[in-house]
Every structure is written in structure tokens, then in C-alpha cells.
Image 1: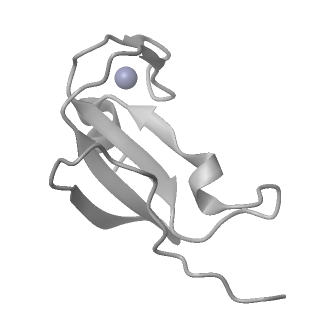
Image 2: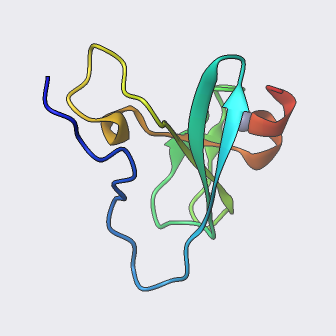
Image 3: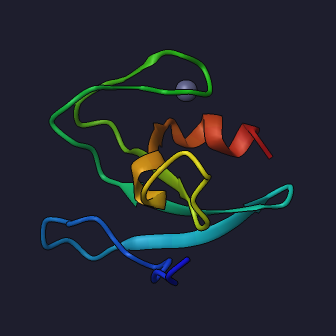
Length: 87
Ligand SMILES: [Zn+2]
């Protein structure tokens, strides 16, 4: 299988990126802090809405699962507190 760069980033709108890598169990995740977007998302931690404009986290795996073409395809929007509670 061809090696792909694992650090690929989705486009960001000119803002400095606040991103780090966190480990949960045996999995490494990209964790990007977002200042808020104009869409609302469903948080997989609490299944509640993340409202437009609310600061939250964008999470995606460093190593993609077998089911997706790219790790970034597995990205999810989380409430900051929900992701931290998942420790
Ligand atoms: Zn949540």
C-alpha cells in the first residue's frame, strides 16, 4: 500500500491553527481547537448540538481506519468538555 502523509490538514480560513496530538488508549488523534463555525454539529460525546459560533474541537485520527480513504474523512466535531471527559 502506498504511504500517505498522515499530517494532511483540511483547509483553514487564514487563522493560526491551534492543533495538537492526543492519545486515547492506543489511538492517536489530531485535536484542533476551532473558534466556532457558521454551522451547527452533533457532538458524538453527548449527542447534543454544537451551536454555530460556539468554540469546540475538531478531532480526527492520526491513522485512518480501514473503512475510510483518508483519516480526515473520519473527523468529528466535539464539545471541548465532552472530549476532555472522554479521557
Ligand atoms: Zn458534547
